Length: 285
Image (spheres, rainbow, N blue to C red):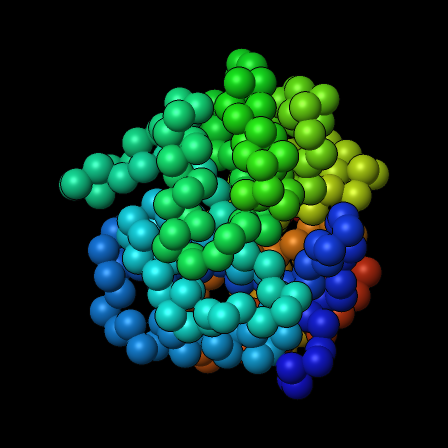
């Protein structure tokens, strides 16, 4: 695949923001448990550079990956950032010294987290910031309003939500435009079907996290059988199903391997026949 290929097609979302639908999730570039440095930093740098060379223009990250480790590797690998590359980060959490995940949604700390992302990525403005929510219940007006203020100040270009409900999306949209929603969704976990459809109708990118099941990888005899018939891996078929599921789904599978990255990006050219789709649809039914 050449560098001018657009993996999975391009998705225009807002002025100055067009995401190639096959992106890259950088979480696995940290150490075990998304904590500490990677075993092979040079390989992590190589994966990021290869992703951009393959046409990926959407890299998902967070300053609490590591913490700070992944953003610093992104800076080392890609700064100065090529024109058209969009780095999407998240705020709303921190890490304890033992690697624990700590929700942190206080407005003052959200401001601090945005500035830390700017510092560690070495940029004057963040392309997209997703507000990572603790729960899908309750109001997010104060927290999202804080990010909207930073957007007005010019520190953020676009805003999104992660782990959000439909009601929280509606509340956020009344405050500022929302360009992305990042929720748990995959072939076997389709609780957000209605939200996926709504995002498509409203031209909002829906980025499934754990598109391959995350820490409990997808296991399905049906998936394996379809993949064998198509001469692809089960993981490739599961990603291809997501691309077909909705025109505004953008994929951010993660890997610390250049070879695995190439397999993921190749999914953009994998066509699923109608009978295969029908079989795969039964998995999450």
